[in-house]
Length: 323
Image (cartoon, rainbow, N blue to C red):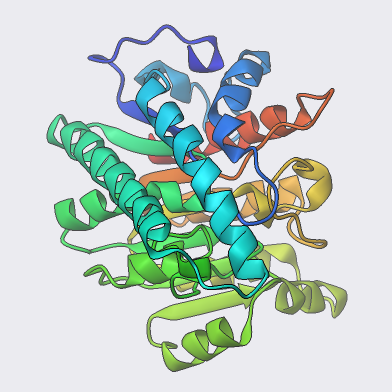
């Protein structure tokens, strides 16, 4: 029961799909445990929301965490870690083992695609709780199909996620947004808080400026240091988005003290309140949130802080989607 709610699957307006997957995580592991960690921390929240009121009354249903996905994740992690070690040592990647990982990612994509399609056919809103960021591809593919690509993506992340088949993995966590942009998505990708990226991604951003708008963390902080208000920066971000929006929230978009367990933490980033204000500014603009994900939450030893923060971000995302 997420947030301590007892909503039935049939009556809930929003379905949440936990995805315990971190096969391609290339630095710290543990994001496969993120959904369970968030679930455990979630009853600590008070349900009345300052910005949106009693949104929980519309119903939020948490699907059981898939044992099948957990088993597949464990099986493929053994292989992927060997492949990553070979990649780091500049050795040739064993083709059969790489194929198994890529086929496993495709298996996951197809499963999440079918789950999402079922939810949309029943007129449910959908949210995905990772897991590494690549895990939400199937859900976005289903949304692109259902909405004929007529939406944009607000992407909050420390990373651009625009690499091509990173470390040989076709559906790497570092490639998710590039893969999504190869779908027939008509709206733009608007990324916020990015502060770790490579030359390949910088070239991609520049050569796809009609489709990709990145508000680098350095740009945002420079604006604040030079006297701009966070409200004006939020309005600039939101102005780049169309009427229908999908929100993809990687927890490492926040400053590390908010999510110390995440797999690839980076100094800088948004404070918790900055992120909430951006989401509220989006809602107040009248734009419609058609779906969302929250990814890369992972537990730290001896603290439930990552789950606590993750649950609060998740509840705000639920509130936006239920408007």
